[in-house]
Each structure stands twice: as C-alpha cells, then as structure tokens.
Image (cartoon, rainbow over all chains, first blue to last red; front, side, top):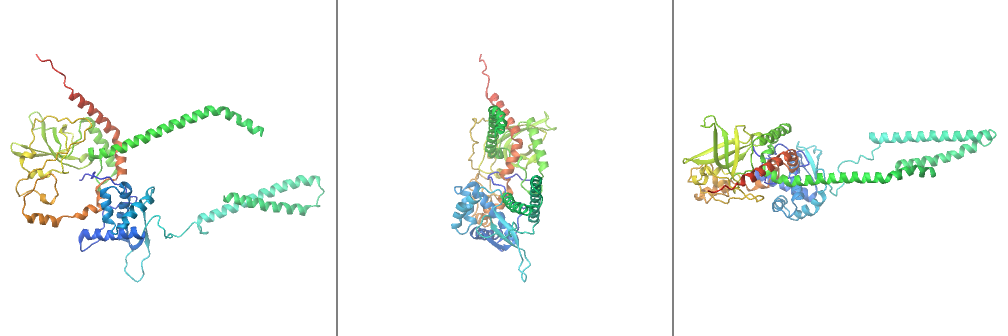
Length: 219
Length: 292
C-alpha cells in the first residue's frame, strides 16, 4: 500500500497508460534502457516520423508524450523540465525546437501529440512487428489513404443515390407544373398547333432549373 | 409586403419585454457561468494545497489496485468519519497526541504523544506512526487514521522536517525523539506557512536498521563512516532514475484526476476546516479570571 506522490503535478496522458513498463534487456541495465530510449525520442523530435520495432515505438511514444506535456505545462523557465529536456534530447538544438515549435503546435490539442501506426513486416527477415511513430502535425504527406474521395465507399454511394433521388423528384415536379400550365393554355387555344414548340421550351428551362438545384444542393 | 409588416408588428411590440427578458436571462446565465468559472478557479487553486493536506484521499497509483467505485465509497466513508472526530492537518515531523480506547488501560482510554515519523496508505487504510521515548525505551505506535477506536487526534506542534520519512530516528540518539507527554498545543499564527524544522539529527554508532548512508538524507548529521561505505553508496546510487518520466508518472495521480477526486469532497472538507478554525479561535480566547 503506497500513497501517491504529491511533490509534482503532471498532466494526464492522452494515450492509455500501461500498468508496467517494458524491460528491454540491456547489458547496462536500467540506465542502458533509458539511454536507448532517449536516442529514439531524440530521433522522433528531430525527424518527426520514424520507423522502428513496434515495442520500442510504443515505449518511446509514452516518454515523448510525457516530455511534451511537461514542456507545455511548465514552460522553459522551470528548472526540472529544462533538465528533463536536456536529458531526453541529446542534440541541444532540439531543446529549442521542443519549446519554440512543438509547444505552440500542441498547446490547444485535445488528442495525443503522437501517432503510432503498425507497419508491414519485411518478408525475408526477423519476425518482429514494425511500427511508424510520428508527431502529429508533421509536414510529411499522410500515411493513411485519403478515403474522402473514394466512390465505392458506402457513404459516397449513399450520397450519390440521394442526389439521384432528389433529381428525379425535381423532374417530376417540373413536369407536373408544365402539364398544369399546358392544360390551362390548351383550353383557350386550338389543339395540336404549337405542341412541339411548347414541349421544347420547357425542356431547356428544366435543364436550367436542374442545374440551379444541383448547385444549391452542392453549396 | 404589408402583410409581412403587419405580421412583424406584434413581434416588435413584444420585443422590448422579450429583449429585457433575454438580456436578463443571458445576464443571469453569464453570472452563473462566471460564478461556476470562479468556483472552478478557486477549486483549482485549492487543489495543490489539498493534495498535501489530505494525501490519503488520492488512490493508490498502482493500476492493479484501482477500483473507481471502491475509492468513491471509501472517500465518502472517510468524510463521514472526519465529521465525527477532528483530524487536523499534520505532516511527517509534526508532534501529535492520539487518544484511543484501550480495554486494558485504567480509564479504558490511552493517550500517546509522539512525533509522526511516517504516513502511509491511502483510503481507509491510511496510517501513521508515532514515536516517542518513554522511560528510556523507544516506543512506536502505528495508528490507522480512520480507526473507530480513536477518540481524538490533537496536533500539538505543526511543522515539517527536511525528509519525507523520519525512520532514521530509530537509530538516532534518544533525545531527538523524546517528547514531553504533557506537552501543550503550540499555536501558529493564522495564515502562516507551515514551518520547516531544519534540525540535523545525530545517529548512534553502527549497527543500524538500514543503510542510512545510501538514502540521501537531509536531516542527518555527518555519519562518520569509513570511506568504503561512501564508495559503495556511490556505486549503488541510481542517478538516472529521476529522469524516468514514466516511472514518475506511475507514482503519482495526474492533475485531472486529482481535480475530479477533490471536487467531490471539497465542500465537506472545507466545512470541516472552517468549523475547526472556529473552535481554535474559541480555544485561544481565555476568559480573564478575577484575581483576589
């Protein structure tokens, strides 16, 4: 039974916290473990997207999230936070990047600062899962496919059908209106004189109307 | 056109009233919002104090031991117990007097005075150890804070020490953990910060209960050990551990959760505190007696 430590306040992680940490056997023990992790954190902050073994990526992600959240919470005038940044970022220009680029970028985020994706395993090679770890809001093109423009996706199919249904309904309405107008005019005029011309003119109007309707719907 | 205007007229007629109503309602909502915001701010400001004063209200940070419902029930039980007996603010290093029922004692109650050397546990299992030297014999009693056999907890001297645990007092000279059993309450001025006692304790000669030279203690005088002990301590120390951000995270409760926990019990605790302050003021005022 322990009491929670209260000397330092921390922000909640935006990713699920594990119940225990990975050991990552290292000839230099726990110190070596932290050392190799900080190399990875440094690489992540430097390149913003790295590919590596999945377990290491997952562990690195936790440390990177903690480092960024502390930097946001305490800023660059807090001694302990600065020492942390100094330890975790082995290239010292990255300390500037952390406080001047990443903190303003993530200040108003409600989600995690990093994204972890599973990567395909190289076929002839070790049977170990690979992952891609990246900082959110990085300048690279997205790794996930753009699904908003795929015609075969169900929501796009449904939208297309809805458009069609709207169009047929409009056609029917216009046709009904024309019929009504014709019948009103036909009572005063002799039959079968200007049938063809009457039918042509409204057809053009219909097109215009339809286009207009489409535009309205699109906007 | 006319028809539209005529339709609009009733609206314009009502508009003044409705406008004022809307303004009032918006004002009231704004005031309410401001109030709630202010309350939240006050809460947020009080929480850093709360976590130091009531550390046992925070749950065990170990994920395996967490259970949100049990924690909530425990907290309500703790508040209920605190309405029955007055458990004041105290820290490791404060001198307390605890009166508890003891069936073997002459008056069925037992009062023990001592220095708090450790606070441990969370929830209803929170406990503290009091230490004193009685008749040249070191005595320690572990009390559970929410034990129903406890009648009274008095804080005689409210102060902190340089370390989080004072277990080294077991190996220190007896005068450092000797306190008068009939000690009076020392009253701090209201609003003053908790004083930190910078006393440095002198330890007895080895053998000890623990290897104190390896624990980086602040409240201990020079240990006067041979050089090999310090060399070994240097070999054994783990300076990288303070950089392990995740370990640090897993030892604490994040602020968002603390806010949630303390906002649930804040009102009751605040009431109890104000009651205690009133009682204190009453106790301070001594009625002048007529001298013959």
